[in-house]
Length: 193
Image 1 (cartoon, rainbow, N blue to C red):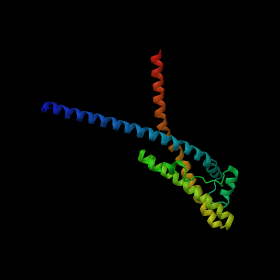
Image 2 (cartoon, rainbow, N blue to C red):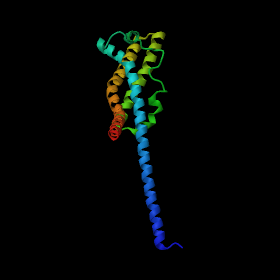
Image 3 (tube, helix red, strand yellow):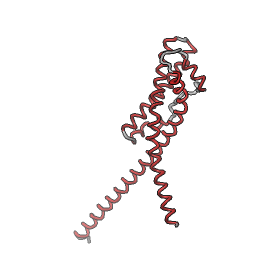
Image 4 (cartoon, rainbow, N blue to C red):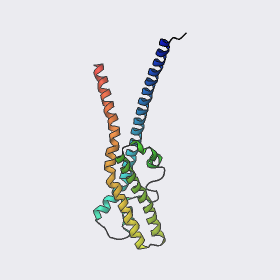
């Protein structure tokens, strides 16, 4: 028969086991989120590098030309000079942003806002470049071309300016992992000696 002392020990043991189990669940969840955050950050980092390589020649040539008001065909000329492929969308809905948009909440508020601004500018520029070349091929309304072209350059400029800080912030997630690997390597080296 279970006495009161045995019963209280049993309850106490079950409570301690529950607390220990909860602790391990929380630690496991923490590391799972940390690894997920690192994986997502690396994907955004790689995609932003790729997008920056695409938009940099256009933005830099436009800035170098120093044109604020020029020909409505400036974009068309820059596309030819930079070999920008207008047959492909600048950004599609299969991109990292659309796939992992819901997971952006894993990052801090400032990074979240910067990522959203960057991708909104890229998506807007993608729609504008498509509209621009449709407008050229159909009606050639120069006022509309000016408007679309100016908005395109504004959007690309926003994305271009945000890219370096985003790359730095996303690279920090991978740097921490490299430091851990370096420490583990050095500990293993010391223990072998």
